[in-house]
Image 1 (cartoon, helix red, strand yellow):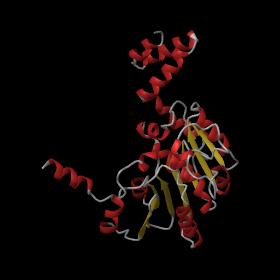
Image 2: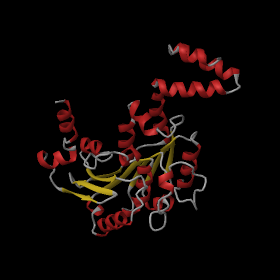
Image 3: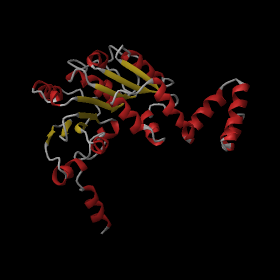
Image 4: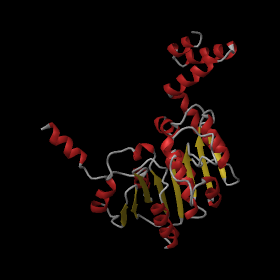
Length: 297
């Protein structure tokens, strides 16, 4: 009986498919290929939110699932286009290029007043790289790679499967494609050296780098955990986000035990007794004695 229940749970329809049946928004499409899929739900003509799977999605055993960011777009009342990744190859697929280019050529993106491309890590690369399909779009990328082409970023040692992909052809360098965006927000941890290197490559007059220190390569998870992710995304979409506003929101990280633990580890590893003593006093005031006591161990 338990195995039947598990099977039933696995076969539950994803939200986008259910919405096609029971919501007022029944217009859209699903295009499936060996290594990717595209899912579109048309809600209105004001905002189209385009999301791309990260590595977690690419490693999922389920092809029929909700794409990255679908629920957020649904709650916001936005139309949606999602890129599923069925292979951890950083979307380096000529059939995907053709399909997206055809959508662009057919005026798909032009139907919407505002187009927003977003994703994290591998999906962040895709958001930056494919944003040129809709010039003057908004880009929100978390811990993105600018490219994994070995000839361009020979210093990148992570993501072996991505580095082995074919980086010939279009969209190979997101730094070039991002120049066509109206505004791009790159949110990353500057203390994660390789993420910092990619952010430097993406830097441009239309790009704002928002530094989420000590979040490692899990920046988006940290922002979600401390409850500010949705606010950040919405304020980037309406273009009201600023450096000052981001750091005002990001101060909430002080409530995160995981963040405080990373901070305490960094300070504890330093040679500055003054910094250790100052942080110890702060942690005691915050009623975090266990973290405070580790500073001098």
